[in-house]
Length: 167
Image 1: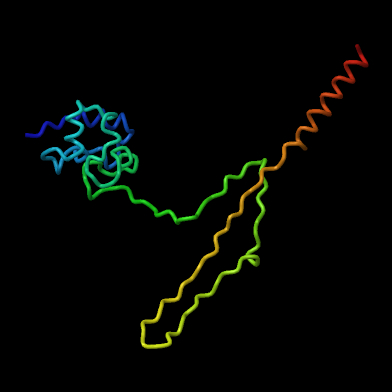
Image 2 (image 1 turned 90 degrees about the horizontal axis):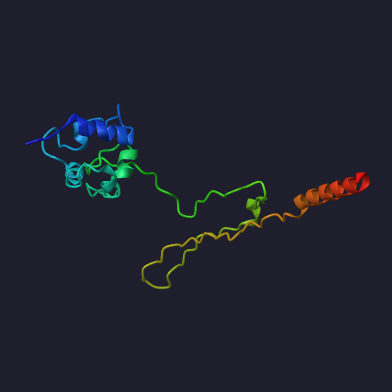
């Protein structure tokens, strides 16, 4: 027996701002309008307390219920999960502020080793060529705050001088 209630769906939509999306559907908690899916069972077992099951992965697809809801995928369907973009190892974005100076390293200063192949002296198997990629350990040095503080000192001395002149 199915106990689908529009008030549960309304509450879900208000809690997650999903009205008008594909999650604005009974399929969020039910399997094609029939029994409860894993998310629906978890919701029911926790008294329809959405916050209590947000960190769970009800459908065991590797994404928490919150991650799936935010990606507008069904948290009770293991075949519907957020599409992710793989992150390239070592790819970083520098955090640049006004107080830092970024120095670009010209590509001409980087030398890549060419693959090497060894020729076997007998009938043994040939080793595959290897390529080594140099690792850059460049760190940024923050700019000294001394220059900016000079304005504060000059302003202070001007105020002291004016105060003495008119006091």
